[in-house]
Amino acid sequence: MILAVAVLCSIVLWTHCLHFTDVQPQQDFDLQQFAGEWYRVGIAYETPAFIKYKDQVMTSKGLLLPNENGGANLTMWTLSKGCFPNFYVYEKTDVPGLFTYFSQRHKMMKDITVVETNYTEYGVVLKYKKMDKEYTQVALYGRTPVLRPELIEKFRSFVLSLGFSEESIAVPVIKGISEALEENPCPFTEPR
Ligand SMILES: *[C@@H]1O[C@H](CO)[C@@H](O)[C@H](O)[C@H]1NC(C)=O
Ligand SMILES: *[C@@H]1O[C@H](CO)[C@@H](O)[C@H](O)[C@H]1NC(C)=O
Image (tube, rainbow, N blue to C red; front, top):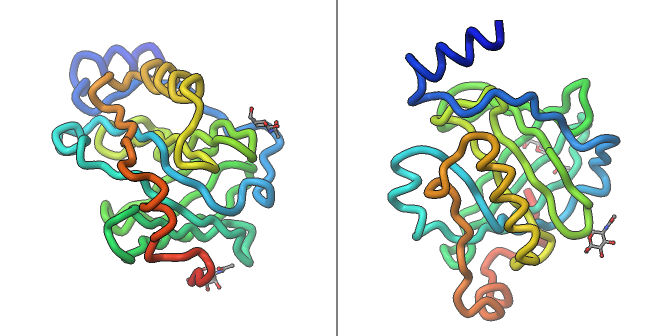
C-alpha cells in the first residue's frame, strides 16, 4: 500500500509530495526542558514563493512556554522587523513531542513534531508530517542565533533526505548580530 501511494505520488501528485518517512519525535521528549528562548536559525519550505524570497528571510526569535493544558504557547518575533509577534497555541497529543494547532493561515489543523533536540543547544522541528510541499516545513532552532556549522550540515542532510531541494533551505545570515539582538524591540519579559 505504501509503495502504491509512493508511486502514485511520484507520477501524479509529485508537485505536492515530499518523501514518505514516518518521522518520530525525540524519545522521552521533555517539554519543560525544551521550553524557553529559541532562535530559528534555519528553515526548509518547498514552495515557489518561499524559494523566491528566501534571501529575505530573517532569523526569528521565539519564546515557548508550557501551558495549562500540557501543550505550549509559542510567541515568535522576526528580528529587526519591529514588534509584531505571532502567537501560536500548540495542543498536546498522546505522544510526547507531538503537538497540534490550528493554522490561521491555511485554515486547517497541523501537527508539530520535535524531531530531535538536546535542549541546551539545538532543536529540529517538523511542521505537518503528512509531507505536503504546500504545508510542510522543517526548522532548525538554536538557543543562540548562530549554531555550529556541523549542526547546520546535519539539518541540511536531514531535510534533503525528506525530499526537500537545496533551494528550499534558508539559513539567514544576521547582519550586525549583536546590535540586532541587544536592541530587540520585543523583550521576552512580557509574554502574552
Ligand atoms: C497560553 O495561551 C492561552 C490562550 O491565549 C492563554 O489562555 C494561557 O494563559 C497561555 N498560557 C501561558 C502559560 O502563557
Ligand atoms: C548539547 O550540546 C552542547 C554542545 O555540544 C553540549 O554542551 C550540551 O551538553 C548538550 N546538552 C545535552 C543535554 O546533551
